[in-house]
Image (cartoon, rainbow, N blue to C red):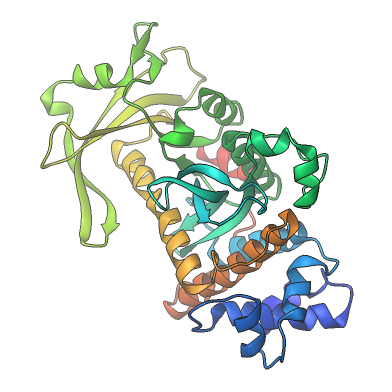
Length: 377
């Protein structure tokens, strides 16, 4: 913990916040039922929550620079050339209308429409471990169209409306430009159905396996737009393979898998497929993915990437349960980013500590993403 603290200490100009941020992160890691200003202060032996609240509300420091330190920390300790980046969002249930970005909107966490904030996250997963490395608060148009309301919540005037897909592009851009080692990107159908995101990834040669809707259309080998479910339905029975896409809570996650090639006009050495995952107990339960990767990529490689998406759900569960990700009591835009970043830092510390305990520590992998892409050819 001291090593991690030294990594971020330079982001705080004064001694008091440097010491307080260490106490804040230690409190997030403590076995407290709730992790808010009062309980974190009590755990640190302070008589009031004022100092902890100042840290996330008023003290001068930049959460984005700490995020950059966090991302590098994860890359150094968990980095691997075959790693997967995963995007997803999670909801934070809130009362009232004053918290930045809050409104009645669908929350996958609750499984229904609730009054909540939505955070969009990027996770890193390798054989060494998994951790959250970036975050953005989704601001609905109802907020960005009302600049007076934004100012009351501390949202700067220069922050525009951005779709969740655009927030993911911003986080992926930061990961690529910072040299985070990875080979794959995956996300659920809320992101995979966005053809603009798929185009962006392909233009940057980012290999991906993205879930999509059954009625999504792609360019088939016949050079016409066709639905993904119809392409898969046309496959012969022998195209299906029974395979596990990884370990689940109850053992191997075994499904029937098949893929169909698409996009005959493609870059040299690259392949495009529609991938399908069918339940063994209910043949009508089929999930679909759009894939882009080296032409020699096997079915087994694609399905493992598809299965890796669940790592971000595990990150959300652990960060909320063990590091207080959703325990904050701040309403401002800046306060949200500060608490969330420090909670992600605490969760990353747990992931790195677990990797070391399992003997997974290996030399850092500083390879740039583009170098990995070139070597894969």
